[in-house]
Length: 634
Image 1 (tube, rainbow, N blue to C red):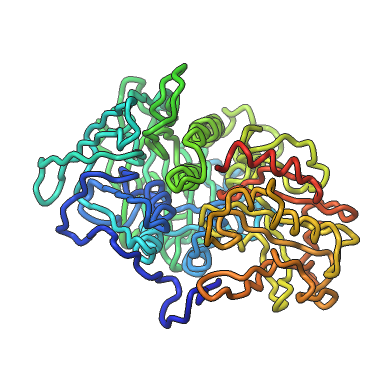
Image 2: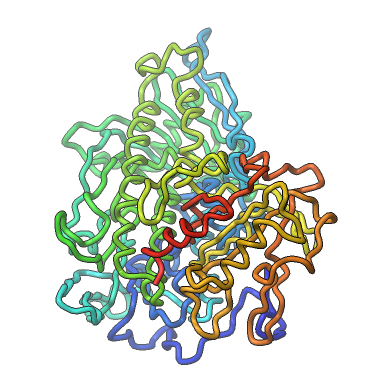
C-alpha cells in the first residue's frame, strides 16, 4: 500500500482527504437536480459500482436505496475466489480473509445402501484446486460486505453516502440531447412516503433487484422458467451430532430431499439450504405458508440418523428456484445505433438459484466491468461507444451462469437414482461439483475478441494467461525492498490499465528489451502513454507499467532501471520504488514456470482495469500495442 505521495499526514491511510466543493450528503440535505450517475439499489452490485465511482469526485454520483438503512443480516453469503481477488483490489480482501469462514473441503453424503433411511459420507473434495487462485473461497454475511464497500465510499475523496428511503419508480431517456438526458422519478419510502422528486442524470444503473423498476422502464423483461421446487434457507445457531457441520456439505437423502450446509464466520453460525416440496406448475411458494419449523423438521428427516437442535434462527427465507435472463443489459433496442444511457446489473437482469453461490458474485462482477468504462467516458478518457461493450460482454457470461445453474439445480433436486449422472461410480452431484469448480470459483469467465480483447495470435508467449480471462497472479519479489508478494495485488480498483513486461533471458538491469520498451513508452509520440497523458499528470495516471525479471533481487541493480520504472510522481516528485519485480527466491514458485511465460523472449501482458487479460505481445510489439489502444483511449 502506498501513501504520503503528496505529503505526510497521520491517521488511517485508507481515509482520503475530502475533495473541495463536494455535494452536501448529510441526512436531511436536499437531493440534487442533476447528477452524472444515478445508481438504484444498495445491494452488492450497486455498492461495488459506487465504490469505484466514489474515487472520482469530479463524477457526481448518487446512489438511492428504498430501505431506510443498510442491510443487517441474511441474504447471500458466499464469496468465490474471483470476487476475493476483486476485494483485494478494493483494499479489503485481507479483512474478509480474517473475518470469514474459509471453504477448504466439501463433503458429500448419500443414502446408506445397508439402511437407506440413513445417510453416510461418500466423498470429499478440495474446494479450491491448487493454484487456481491465491485467494480462498469464503463465507461471510452479505451485510458485512455492504459495510466494507460503504467504508470505501465514505473514505473516498467524494465521501459518497447512500440516499436511503428513496426508490426509482420511473425514468425516460431523451436521445436528442447529451445534457443529462435521463429523467428519473424518485419516490420517498420512509420519512415522507409517497413524496416524489425528479432528478436528471447522464447515466442510470439499475441494481434494484428482480422486480427492477429501472428494467421495466427501459422495456426489459426477464425470460426463463421455474423448477417448481420449494427450498428454505436459514442461518442458525444449533447443536448437532452431524460430524461435518463445520465443512461445506451436500446431502442427498433417499426420499426426503436434499440439504446444502454452509458454515459461517465466527465458529458457531451455519446456514442450511433445505429442500421442501415440489410445487404444482401453477403454484407459487407463497401459497404453501411454509415456516421455519417446516425447514427444521425437513432437515432432521433428511439428515437421519443425525439431528439438529436449533437454539436460535438468525434469519430465514423460503423461495422457489427460477432461472431468468433479460434480452439485453442496457436501454438500446435491437438494431438501434446509439450509445446506451441506462444499464441493469445483478438480479435486475439475471436471476437463478443460490446453490452454486454465484448470485452476489456475478452481480458485483457486472458492475466491476461497467465501473471503469463509465469512469473512462465521464473523465474524457474514452468515447461513449465504449459503454456498448458492457451488455455485449456481461450478457454472454450471465447466459453461461443461467445454463450451468439450471443443470446444477435440477441435479441437486433429483432423487437418488433419477439423475442421468447416477451410476457413474461417485454421486451425481459430487461429479458435477468437481466439473464445475472453475465455474463456481468465478474463474471461467472468458471475454470474446473485441476492441477490448485481442485475438490469441501471441498466446504462446504466456500460455498460462489466457487472453480474455482474468490475470492469474503468482508470487514475485519486489526489487527495491525484497518484499515477497503476489504480482496481481499491485492492481487496485482505480480504473487504470496495467502493462506487465516480463523480461527475456537477456534482459538485465543494464539493458535489453524491457529498457527499449520503457524508452518507447515514455517518449515515442505513438506510445499510448504519451498520446493519452495530460499536462501535469503523473506518467502512470492511466497506464501503469510494471516489469518482472527472471533474476533474483540480489542480481539486479535498481539504480540502473529505466526512468519509467522509477518515475517521479506527486506534488514533490517523489520516486516510486514499486514498479520492478523479480522471481521468487524462497520457494513459493517461479512466475515464469507457473504462468507459461516465454523465458527466452519474455512478453508484454496488457490487463484491463477490471483485471482481465486484454492482449499479449512481444516486448518489441510497439505498433501492435499502439494499434490496440488507439480505438479505446482518447
